[in-house]
Amino acid sequence: MRLFQFYAQNSGEALGLFWQHIYLVAISTGAATAVGLPLGVLLTRRPAWRGPVLGLANVFQTIPSLALFGFLIPLPFIGGIGARTAIVALVLYALLPIVRNTYTGIAGVDPAVRDAGRGMGMTDRQLLLMVELPLALGVILAGVRVATVVSVGTATIAAAIGAGGLGEYIFRGVAMVNDTLILAGALPAALLALAADGLLGFAERRLGWRPT
Amino acid sequence: MTAALEVQGLGYELPTGGALVDGVSFTVGAGETLVLLGRSGSGKTTTLKLINRLLEPTAGDVRVAGERTVDVPVTRLRRRIGYVIQEIGLFPHFTVGDNVGLVPRLEGWPAPRIATRVRELLALVGLDPEVFVGRYPHQLSGGQRQRVGVARALAADPPLLLLDEPFGALDPITRVELQREFRSLEGRLGKAMVFVTHDVREGLMLATRIGLMYGGRLVFLGTPEEFRAADHPECQAFIAAA
Image (cartoon, rainbow over all chains, first blue to last red; front, side, top):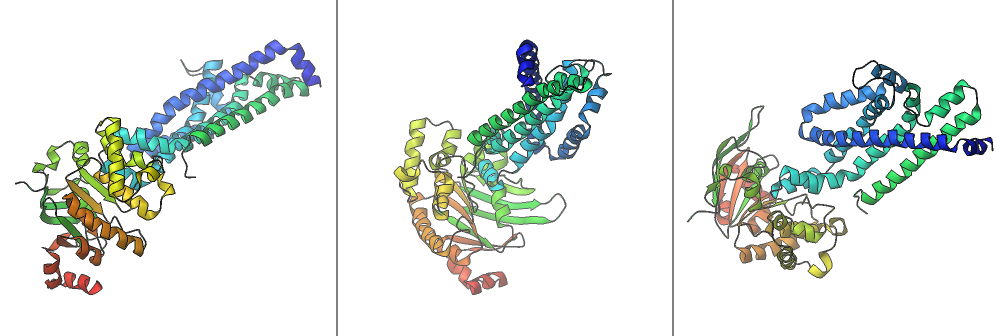
């Protein structure tokens, strides 16, 4: 009840933080997909790079998010206080599931199908675009979904370095020991994560190929 | 007159050493079916892949219609060679029609011509085009899938066909049915074919000539009659199994 009152009194600010949150997630997941998808494809073509690249992505994944934000602040160009640093960190987090799933999805294509395609005279590009990516699309989208959902959660912590988003309310609420304020940030963030999961899960089922 | 396929001293050595194929030579003309017979690991499949350059020969020479395969861009080479494998490798996300029409599409044929060709080919391999053109591979039986695989290999009318145990995964009854049909197709198509199998009865039924492989070498090459009379121990081992 008090939550509704809070939103009614602070609708402008709440909406602003909400959109800021979506912005952080959308930009970072978008960038991670733009980098991660080609990177994942590359790994299927250069198996020797697989270990180092996935290893590195794994390292970023294991660094606690608050620590990663902290590490980035002193760096020139990408660091500092604010949304830019947060986006860099979110991209690093989102990279692993997208690269890994792109690689796994393509590597999981039946070798006989690949052999047949090559044996019939498909170029590598045709094989990739006509066969491998369509067959791997479901798995790739699952990676994007995981990355997005994780991003929604991690982006709440980005408020700690001044990137804004729904984390603002949570941190403020914790500092002021105000449950309503914490909920005002946590509830929409949770709903956002659920919505992203549902939406991308739907896309995955619609676009992903599977035998029925 | 140049043969559809000439193989001279073909060899394939692994980078780690050890030859999988060694000094294999044969010629296949139009209307001929050379059956490469041999045990598992005797180098039959490797020989086939060396012809369409899924593997690159480390020794010898392959000529398709007189041209050395290494002188032809590899995608163009492969589009002129039909290829059927045991696992068929139909694209699961393509309809039967799209699968069969793939090479014509890669070759940039106009759509109506592809559609006509697809129907023609499905009818040729005994599948009703009305029923099958829009189906997906997982909706077909093993025998039907294999028919689609053959139709796909024939799509761009290649003068040479490579078949790697195309009926190996089928139940015995379907296999015999397809072997019979394939035999009548051989006569009608007049293509040069290299047919790999370890089934000596299949080999004797479909071959104009039999090449027996053993340990990466071609130890016998001759007609089925000559094969029955051959005194190479591996030939006799196979005949005993027939």
